[in-house]
Length: 180
Image (tube, rainbow, N blue to C red; front, side, top):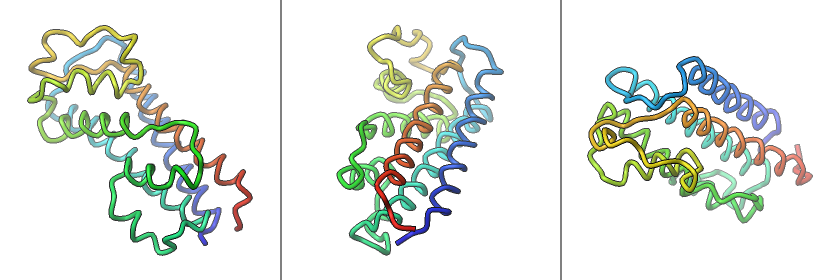
């Protein structure tokens, strides 16, 4: 069994990362703009860091709850959406965020590895899914066929999404009467 202090530290780390990302995005204005070069890689790395912070938190949740694989080997083998999918029945999450996490991962990979250069036609849809309001947002600009465009609102929505998962995991874990 894991300890609650490690879970609280993991949650605090995820929350701090989300706050930083959202505040930095808000300072840059709201108009969608193409991300290029170092800035594209930086935003992509930040997405990856939030994903890593969430992954660590999922591992701590599993330990606190006494997940059936106490040494965590099964959870270490999978990416964050798969870890969450594996843990979701144990913790009864209200949301099923795996598809959105995967879309964010693809957007982040495009930013990190291709400096925002779009090579897949589906990338525009991934941006909309990552934002979480694909049914409300207009399609990405035509220029997005060549360069990935993200608004500060989208980046803030992604940070808020990670924060909401972390908050729900913490509330459900500590509310589950988990042993210390």
